Structure formats: C-alpha cells, structure tokens
Amino acid sequence: MTTGLRRTALADTARHPEEFAELYRGAGYWTPETFAQFLPERAALFGDRTAVVGLDARGAQRRLTYRELDEAASRIASGLAALGVRAGDRVVVQLPNIVEYTEVVFAVFRLGALPVFALPAHRSAEIGFFCRFADAAAYVVAAENGGFDYRGLAREVTAALDVPPAVVIAGDAAEFTALDALRAHDPLPTADVDPESAAFLQLSGGTTGTPKLIPRTHSDYLYSVRESARICGVDAGTRMLVVLPAAHNFPMSSPGILGVLHSGGTVVLAPDPSPDTAFSLIEREAITMASLVPPLAMAWLSARSRSEHDLSSLQVLQVGGAKFPAEAAKRVRPELGCTLQQVFGMAEGLVNYTRLDDDEDTIVTTQGRPISVHDEIRVLDDDGAPVPAGGTGHLLTRGPYTIRGYYNAPEHNSTAFTDDGFYRTGDIVRVTEHGYIVVEGRAKDQINRGGEKIAAEEVENHLIAHPAVLDAAVVAMPDRYLGERTCAFVVTEGEAPKALALKAFLRERGLAGYKIPDKVHFVDAFPVTGVGKISRNELRHALAATFEN
Ligand code: OOB
Image 1 (cartoon, rainbow, N blue to C red):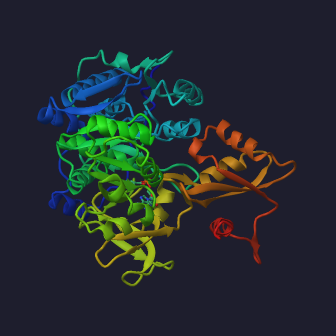
Image 2 (tube, protein in one colour):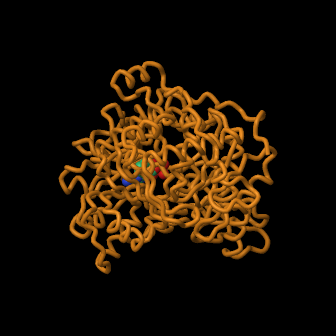
Image 3 (tube, rainbow, N blue to C red):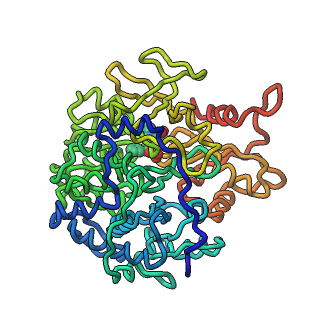
C-alpha cells in the first residue's frame, strides 16, 4: 500500500510572534534541543541504565536500557521510512501502556515526523477523524488490548478513507505490517529538524463538534519537560509508575515519561490502572513517583487499608486532570506516606504544580502555581474586565509553552484566543495572594469525567444523527466518584428509542466508550425564553441546574 504523493505539508501553525520567541530564547527556555535527538543523546548519557519496564504487545515482561530503547527506535524509524513516512508527516499512534509505545514514539520523532497522540479508548469516529484531518501517513496500533481487537478498528478506518495510512500493528499483525518486521531495518541517522517547528499533535479535551489538534513545538515542549522535571525533583534515581494512558499530556510530560527519560530515571508502565496492579508494581520496582486522576487517587486511598504491599519507596503522588477535593487531598500524606503534588494542566500548554516543599495547607487546598515566571495569567469577569485581586473569574494565559493556535482551525482560533495571543482556558479560577491557582469551576461546554474530557457538542452531533432524535443537549451531572458524569437530554419525535438503544447507536457510530452518556433523559421540549429559543449555553446550564440540589 503506497502512502506517498497525496500528503499535505504541515499547515503553518500559529507561531509565537518574534518578540516573544526572542524573549523565550533569551531566557534560555527555548533551546536548539529537539525530540529527534532526545533519545540518542540520552542513550549516550545513560546507556546501560534501565529506561523502560513493562509488558509488550504479546504480554511478555520487558526491561529496556536506554541503549536498547534507542536501538529499537532507530530501527523502527528506518522501517517506517521504508513504508514511506517522511519528515513532517503525521503518524497516528494508538498504543496502550506497553514498551512499544516508547519505541514507536521515539521512532517517529527520530524521523522528524509528528505523532498524533490517540488514546486506546478511541474508536472509528475519533481515529477516522485524526487520520483524515491530520492526513496521516501511518497508523500504529496494538493488535489487541483490554479485550478489544484494534485490527478490526484499523480495517474499519482504512476502508472509509480514500487514501488510507499504512497500518502498523504491535503484536499479531494479521494482513497488516507487523511492527516487529520494521525492526529488521538498519538504523537511520537522526533527522535534522527546526526546534521551533511542531514536534507532534496532541489532542484537546475539546468543546467543539470535532476534536481539535494541538501543535506543540520541540522548543516549547522540551522547556516544559525540563522545568517540570526540576520542579518535581525528578533525577536519575526516579522510578515513575505510569498508570494513566501514556499518550495523555499529564503522564507524558508533567514531568511524566519524557521528564523521567530526560533525567536518566526509569519508567514503569502499568498494564491496568487497578490499585492491586499498581501496589504490586510499586513494591516490586521500588517506585518513587506516580501520577493519577482524582478517582484513581481515591481508589488507592480506599484500597490502601486492605493492602499488605510495601509502598514505602513512594515519595511523590501527583494528582491532576480534574479537581481533587481537599477532603481527599489531606488523606494522602497520612495514609499513603508520600507527598501530594496537585497538578492543574492542559494539553494546550500551561501547567501548574504545588511545590514539594509547600506547606500542607497549600498542597491540599490549591492546584499549584505555573511552571514559569513568564507564564502570564489573567483572571477576567464575564465582560472581559480583570477581577479584583483574589477574585474568581475566567482564566486566560499565554507563555513560553502555551500554543497560539490549534492545528488548521482558523475560525475556532479566532474565539479561543484573544487578539494579543492569550488562550481562553474555559476554567474558572481564583489566584491566592501567593500566586497559587484554585480551580473553582468551568465555563466551557465540556464534561470532565474523572479527568477524561468530553465535548458536549461532539456527543450532541452524534445523538442528533439518530433518525428519531430532534435535538439533544449534553451536560455534566455531579458524581461522588468521578466528579462528573455525562447526561444527555434528548427530544425525540415519533416513537422514542430506549436509552440503551441510543447508547448502542453511539457505539455503532464509533464513538469512544467514555463519551457515551451515562444517563439519557427524554424530554418533550427544551426550555425556551420569551423571544424564542435560548442559546445552547443557557440551555445546557438550565438543564445542568436540575442536578444541583
Ligand atoms: C490535563 O490536560 P487536558 O488537556 O486533558 O485537560 C485540561 C483541562 C483544564 O483546562 C481543566 O479544565 C481540567 O482539565 N483540569 C483540572 C485540573 N487539571 C486539569 N481541573 C481542576 N483541577 C485540576 N487539577 O488534564 C492535564 C495536562 C497536564 C497536566 C495535568 C493535567
């Protein structure tokens, strides 16, 4: 299967204006370092140290040194090049927490191609969109994981595309190209790439009908990785357990897999997120650090009293992705015996951390402060005016590792960013007198389901595609365990389908499981105002209010 010729060049994504680029270079934030050289340089520094521990696609336990990881990445890079993947091409990577994830990501980097970081939970609706929208040259996926056969997904996705990407399978490849076959190729030299060009496309949690892709540059991302590692005390002795999906921005770079590998530490990939699996790995691998979303942190807290495992190596537990309630946060030190670090970040850029030496009150009640003194923070009221110091309002930000625009989305960019380049995060926050951010709520039409982000409009569009559905509004409902769950209000005509049938319909359309509404409420009509139909925003808020007491 050939993939050449028709591929577009990477669109010129919004760069930082030169005056800012100069500032960030001058401050030593943006350096010539790139992700293409990242691993060869680390292999030269840390050769025989263990880089990655985990299962592979066939379920075998593997331990790779830095040198072995670099050798594998460079062979796979060569194999991908033989399939037609070139510098600047996009490669959709959808791998679970297996060692091949690190091999493939660094292989793509080495070529100067751009990984598009899909999640294992994504299905044909999302993967098909990423392949089309990013004009992917290749799609790399595991044969199966968690009882799901991704080769079937690859068949479905490629059949629907005019010019399908080359499919590469980790594990049993069936009719596709086996990742293992790529390893037979001789290593290639590392690509020479512009450090201020896009290194990869990360996924946005999203608020719109179709997902947005986030172009992060080598310079901006590596700055955040190096600084995150420093702030979080990561060094060659760090042994990090990766429980969350490896491709998410949090476990990838805050400081995550990249921060640990940059520092010479060891990454241990957990095959599943259960406390049992995590606790045995903490004991077996003498884990020093882990990052979790709040529901998992709560699961660890409740499993701890029933567990005999020795967790004494654990020094830092990071919790982020969604608000971690103070009542749970204050249990971490006494019950798990480690320092809590709250992390409030976003794939678009800005990441805040409580510092390891902060007082317990700050650690428990705030979501941290920005990485950089050059992270600019604005807190504005509904009319766009700054709120008085300490007041609550909309968070806007710009800085050395926050994007100035989404990939190929000029219309959305014109509202998601201010004219002077601030990103409207959609989060409602206040800033304490010490500069720490407390997340108070959210103004964007997104459901944060225990850290998994769901764009209301995307799910509504899929619901409305059902022949019996006239209109749909998707809102968050409070949930004790996940923080929020998804509820769809649906207006139907004719014979209403059952809620179960509607959920099955969404699944058949290839929507990721975490986006399927937890609850479906059928209503006769949506509320209207005197002048007619109310805005979708108001509608969502009015419907969400029905859960609030
Ligand atoms: C992380 O990144 P995304 O892109 O999946 O989601 C970003 C959004 C934020 O805008 C905010 O709404 C929410 O997730 N969020 C939090 C939070 N951390 C993220 N809300 C309340 N408290 C927190 N601690 O989620 C992400 C990226 C890098 C590091 C950590 C998390």
